[in-house]
Image (tube, rainbow, N blue to C red; front, side, top):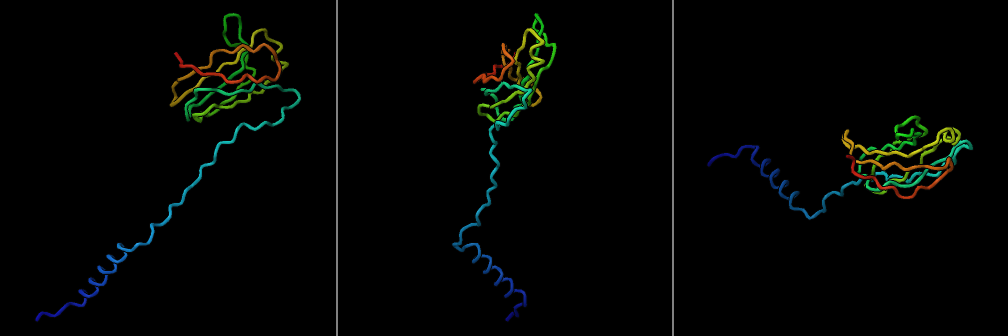
Length: 151
């Protein structure tokens, strides 16, 4: 007869333990879920006494798109002359609330004021906000504004 080597029983016990562990009915370990913070809506912070604001929401903004809104004084040909206020936002795929503060004193020095907007994604202009004439230098809610494909 052939003598068994001392490693054979150890290999056999290890193989049985491995098969037993794989065949057990214990549930798999629970996956830990990381909750991503939900974006908070634009909070209504009180404005300084010398400021007013335009507010509303932008429609059709894709997720992760960079949006810029600018309140501009424009000349008779529609060319921008002075920046009265601007904000930058990040699209969420849902209506995007905005609050654009401005100083009404500079607003009154110009005859024609417009709100302009654009959305970029991956460095490319994808959407624009048709020019919105702003007639008064007062706090206003503009409601829902729809961005359209950029030419």
